[in-house]
Image 1 (cartoon, helix red, strand yellow):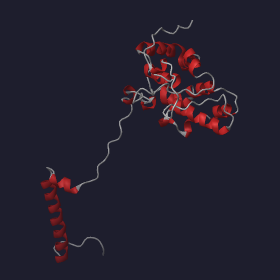
Image 2 (cartoon, one colour):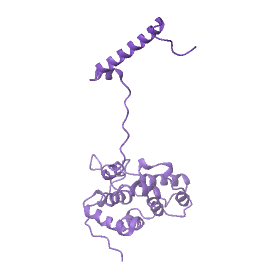
Image 3 (tube, helix red, strand yellow):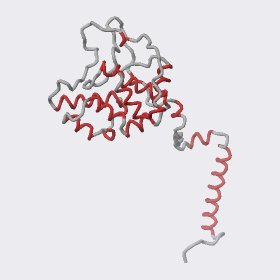
Amino acid sequence: MAIPLLNYAPSSQNQRVAGFEKPGEEQPRIYSAEFMNGSKEINELIWAAYYQIFHEQQMLASNRQLVLESKLLARQMTVRDFIRGLLLSDSFRRLNYECNNNYRFVELCIQRVLGRKVYSEREKLAWSIVLATKGLEGFVDDLLNSQEYLDNFGEYVVPYQRRRILPQRSRGELPFARMARYGTDYRDKLPSPLPVRKPFNFRKLMAGSNGPVISWLFGTLIVLIVYFYVSTYLGILPTLGGY
């Protein structure tokens, strides 16, 4: 028997307040496949979905899901199913799920899927329990099947950060894309970068504490070389090599 979602109280956030203002240039563009017919419009919607789920720093050609794209272009799946496919893809799992603890991964997914910040630590705990008991696939299904997702995005709308900018305020909330894809606990486990080797600096070497010793060695070497050549030339030492 599955554990029911832990109860949590919503907190005061912008998206919980209905807006009656006319949308301006600062409002996010809403991509919906419900009334799109041309392939160009669908391709723009696909790009918006990648940007929302992977964010700009993870939008690589290797992360594209070509099978999902072709199905969406052929209208064989809805936008909600396309979002589900991106969240369950190997790329998303590797870049976001495997490098985060459950709490941080839940926060990431609520931002990218529901388009808002987490309400509280209790909500983070509630969804972390779902992730731990149902696994990644069950967690993603519960998010996409939640009434909040269906009310705001339904089957055809690409998720977006809801009501980030309010007309009464000079500044809006920071975009979710600013959040790093992994936390400090994973960062500290990464191998340390190799130290950068500085180029050899003879002047700095001579100015150090070993400078007098190095000067003496160089001087002695030069004296020995000169003595060897002069002694050979005068016949004091035999000539080496040759016949």
